Length: 173
Image (tube, rainbow, N blue to C red; front, side, top):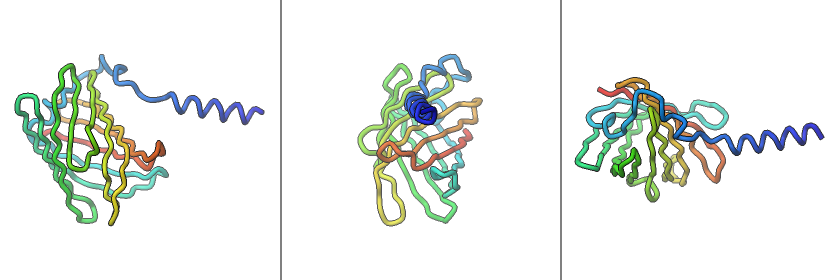
């Protein structure tokens, strides 16, 4: 009976432990997506599967252009196996630190909200895996450390099951 109660407790607490963006409202420095990503940014990332195994590393060169309420991010990826990829984000500034974005491999619209030094960005992505594509959910959390360093942790899920975690460190050039 004790084991059953423990399992119920673990299940309930794991379902209710989602981070809330408003928790970071007083954290500094203040993160504005459009300020950080205007211009050139370099990034380095890792993908770990759900068991913690490192599966892939990559570098990204990002060029951001802000025109009124539209931020365009041209991301150029280079993976450790030599594969190259490109994603072009078109991000609308909706006001009140809210954002929506599209890219060719994003299904529908990505939605984001910033508060304090953090931004939470959620979207569905058609993820290429070898010769196939699967639609996954991204729950992206970005945290500005200082004016140049931004850290990102994204959970990648399919049907609510975590497939892995992407960790990225950005450096504003």
